[in-house]
Length: 170
Ligand SMILES: [Mg+2]
Image (cartoon, rainbow, N blue to C red):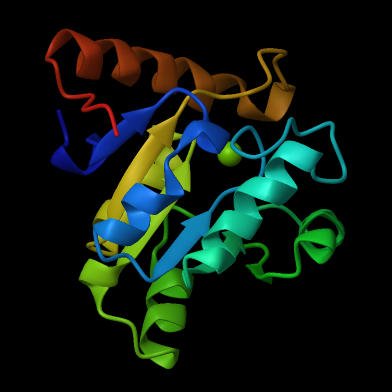
């Protein structure tokens, strides 16, 4: 299996991630996906749970940036109540938008963490950018036509990772 498909850590649910632990590990910047990571693709605005999760990053002096392959309107509408920077049409797994943000804002790659639900986009992108990544389970089980094939591959690789004991709990 491609080593770039192996996440640094795994957590079932993004909002269950211990933000104090992220801070204690020295991370200063976190890139977080929206769809199926923070919310169902059918939910336009963040829940109270997500708002307080994002707030805990600010309390720990960690910059959180929303990074999504989705279009501007979806990303902007979701990010606005959270009062965070966002990158739309990010073209993950291409890491160039992440790398540009890291360099423009003078972060070191070992200070940067990504959170996402897809091996073929989020995990691959983070590993290409040489940053750590937490893989989470997707929130919405209902299939969207556009994600049918990536989803099948994601299930296949998750099974493989589990079998080889490569999903390290965060
Ligand atoms: Mg996603």
